[in-house]
Length: 264
Image 1 (cartoon, rainbow, N blue to C red):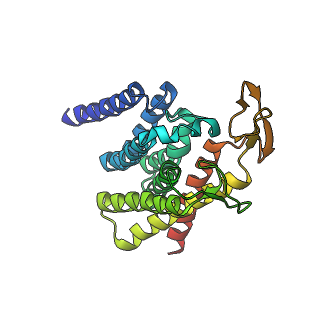
Image 2: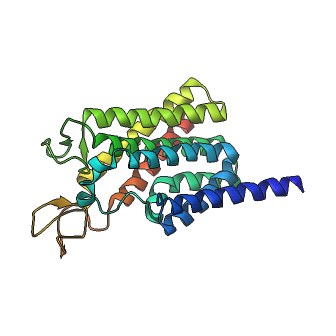
Image 3: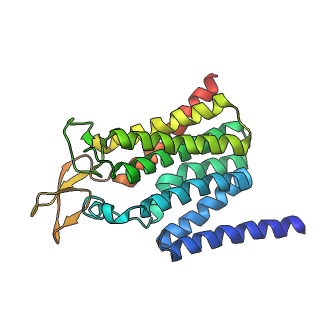
């Protein structure tokens, strides 16, 4: 009976956390529902420690999205979506972790913990790079053209953004190592694959993510409409938006980690 009550309390907490996140406009309604499902899957597979790890990512990324928001207002012209995350953004960043939780619930194996930690480290690294990199005094450089581009442009890097990416990954690597009692080599692997995932995100953002240009003001953007007019696609693939790139990056980094785990 006590176990059933504890389980109900955890489910209630996950639901409350998702609802409050929606109320605070950190998540859209669809995002809150997706976050609830993600939390349930992770809890089922990894218990409270898994929820804590995911919570570190969600809280830090949400706070950073609000950090110096006035200086980030121009990003609304570049990015397809705002700071309040919808279901696709939640799935892009937490979908691989949720799948790991479900897999570990069905067939427990230490490899699923690697998948969980690396996917969250990759998502956190990319989020920190995006949210802090735009505040850099240094103009970012496109890894495709090697030319300076506006802050917030997908596929661009800066020294400050790269450092922020590493910091985001190391936070998750250290937290997961502490929560699950893993050693230095395991933590280092999570950190490195987390950074690799963020780097892959940048590469995909430069080469395959759809990029558009406003036909009226010539601004390069991720939006399908700008200045009240449909934009013109000038790069990438039509169906590959930032959410798809984020999911592929997290998933690929986790798969690489799985491969190394099997080799070693």
